[in-house]
Length: 169
Image (cartoon, rainbow, N blue to C red; front, side, top):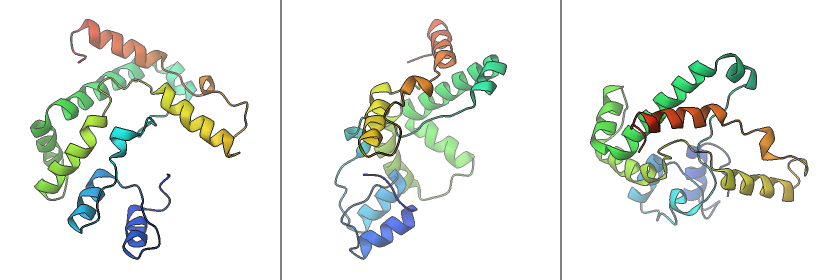
């Protein structure tokens, strides 16, 4: 299942019976369950495919390895805050101008936070699953391989440094 169109379009299609099911972000899922649409599955719990992927140009990584590593370390620490400190994460969101009902945000957090990768590890198996599916459907060249697109050397350095500092959970 792949999301086609924006969440408003998918919600409208669901409400009008044009589609039987569709994927939604946690906040939209909470809103739809309040309208008596049942949540069939939390894809964060059931799918092995990555839900968030960071991309960069290789030349940027090569020219700015220290900046890239510092960014990744900060991102890992921020994700750990969000994953393991619900109240602080939600408060930080609202302090940063997050808008929405507090209860909706709390429920959306409960759907989303368990799927956060505490160390940003690359889900190679999930990416391979997606790649194989796209190959089977003729969407990409059958010779395409993941090693052409996964460059996690700097991420691994960031993870090692955080481990050595005792800050990686």
